Image 1 (cartoon, rainbow, N blue to C red):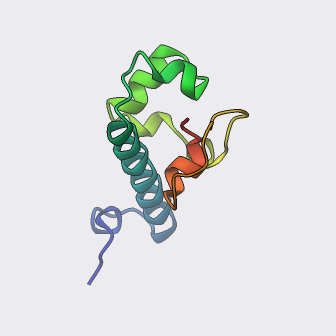
Image 2: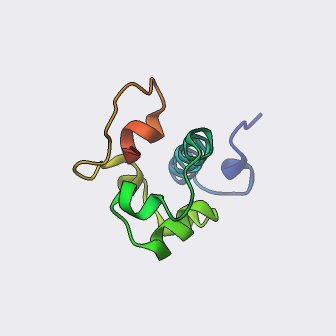
Image 3: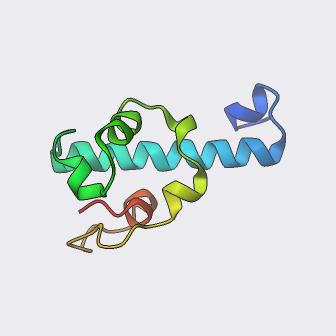
Length: 95
């Protein structure tokens, strides 16, 4: 039995794994944004991204974000590194 929904809808195992990882990273990033109480107005400066890009992130348009983008930190994105193990936070470097 397939446990990856992307495999169930006929993506190759490789594509399904990448899509699942991208989806999980996005979910963790959104969870962290909500947990920390950040607004869309706060995020462009914190993420060093444009407002339209932040809007894409917060409205779930994950197809606009490659796995590499979600995993590659931009400089000076994090001001405190105390947030524990969230891969998305470590990758996306929300401060």
